[in-house]
Amino acid sequence: MTESLVLEKGNKAAVYASLLPQIKALVGDESDSTANLANVCAALKEAFGFFWVGFYLIKEGELVLGPFQGPIACTRISLGKGVCGSAWEQRRTLVVPDVDAFPGHIACSSLSKSEIVVPLIQNDVVIGVLDVDSDRLADFDDVDEHSLNELCTWLASIL
Image (tube, rainbow, N blue to C red; front, side):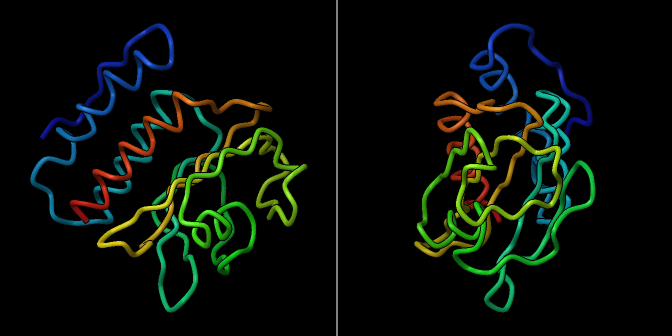
């Protein structure tokens, strides 16, 4: 297992292409889900400087805050509520260029301007979501969506 990242310079696609194999190496043979999710958050935040990166995990019918990097966050989110609850309910990635325009957005921080939420699906069941917030409008695009979907598909397979 490695405990450091070699961060590529350049476009977002190149950074993801370099980062994803490093995340897989970082996780290595570690079996603890909390440790693995925490390191994934740290790697994404370090590589891209996102405002907030974290996981919400389904527990007793709610999304419950898991490992994250960034300012304090909402602790529980119901199915269908906000971007995270909507991604869970719809079982698909949601890219929101302007969170203020998203009906029912849950404002954990007024500094968050755009967001991407990717469900973690294991054996056809959503087990949680990866939530990434930016303090810039329209910060997420197809490159983020493709790369974070790839990451979350892999993560769900090892959790």
